[in-house]
Structure formats: structure tokens, C-alpha cells
Amino acid sequence: MSNKEALEYLVGLGYEKDILVETDKGLFSKVPLTRVNFPRVETLEVSNLTSITDYMKSNIDGYKEKLLIQVVSPREVRLLTPLNDDDVRDEILRAVAILPNNVFYDRFIDTERFNIMLQSGFTDNEDKELLLKFTGLIRDEAVKDTGDDGISQAVTIKTGVASVGDAQVPNPVTLAPFRTFPEVIQPESKFIFRMRSGPEAALYEADGGAWKNQAMKRIKEYLVENLNELEDEYEIIS
Image 1 (cartoon, rainbow, N blue to C red):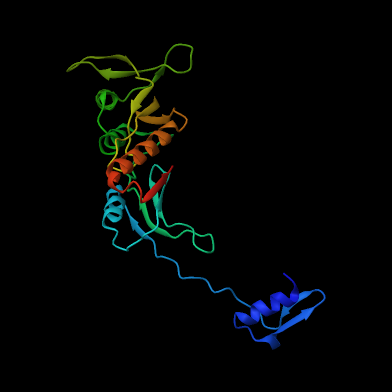
Image 2: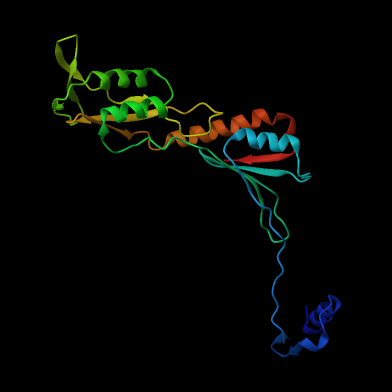
């Protein structure tokens, strides 16, 4: 487009001709121009996946375009509009899971707090029950390393009303902490269980974060299943 054509175009849009200057170097304005942006949607924040499916089914705000659901992480899902004229998406809804704040990894805590953590922050399975029973029987004596592999441990536990004995520390263990939305099955993963004198216990994650992919897959499956009648009204990515 030539300078003359650009000048005529801008005048046609309502710009005053005397504020525009045509030069050999291009077309200039005597007045600074500021881009007027469209108002943005105020994001609604919720804490569960049910709120997203309820919102989609009710279509309370009357969206006619296909919406985008983004599974950002095991604890966050976003509902987005299509790109607008500025190539920007509005975030309609953000779901962030409320998770227990008393679950600790990679640090030793006393066995009483460890026991409470297991009961309140993990779903029930065989290894959880094993650890609860094991930590409940430990005596306040030294934890002994056994073998030459740097992994095995033994502790002194109560084996009867008045008797004691050595027991091998279970390791590794498969547990399912509350790490994602309550509507989906919590993913299980491997943990290294360690003990030291005190007695104190600790859990160390040992699956390289693979549980996150499993959790996000389950979130997507839940949304697809519960929005099956709206399959033409959204796309989902994770």
C-alpha cells in the first residue's frame, strides 16, 4: 500500500487529515495513538471438575463458539474461549483442586505425624495399611542398616505383649496420595520408605513424576465421559 493509499484509508476511518503527515520516509501521525483493547472476561475460580461440566451443560453465558478445555496439570484445568481479533483467548473458568497440606515428601517426621499424614492424605490400599501397622509397632530404639546394598533397613518392633524383634522395613511401597481432583481415581506410584532413630520416617517419590501423566489422562477421560452430549461444543487438550 502506498503512502497516498494509506492516507486515504486512515482518513476514511475518521482520522483528521491535518494530523497525518506524508513524507518520503513514510506516513506519520502528529498525535500519539493508543490501541483500544476490548474488555476481558473475569475468570471464575472453582475447586472441582463438576463445576466445569455443570457450566458447560447449562451454557449460562450463551457462548456459541466451540470452547477449549486445557488440562494444565493434575490440579488445574482451564476453560477458554476461541482466539479473538487480537489472537488472545479469554479464560472463562479455572478449576484448582484443593489438596491436603500436611503431606510431606523428602523429609523425616516423627512416626506419630507420619501416621496421621498417611491416614488423612492417602487413599486406602494394602501398602498404606502395612505402613500404618508397621509404624505403630516401632519401639524407640536405633534403626539399623542391614546388608551391603545401602537400601535395606531393620527396626525393632513389638511382636507381642512383652516381646520384641527385628523386622525388615518395607521398601519400596505403592501409595496413592490425594494429588488431583476428587472426582477421579487418585494415581498410585512408587515411594521409597526410609526410617531413622527417633524414630522418624520419610517418603521419597520414586516414579519420576509418571503419576502426573496418569492423573491428567484420568481428568480428560472424566470430562469426555461427562460431556458426551456436548462433544461438538468443545475441544480438550492435556
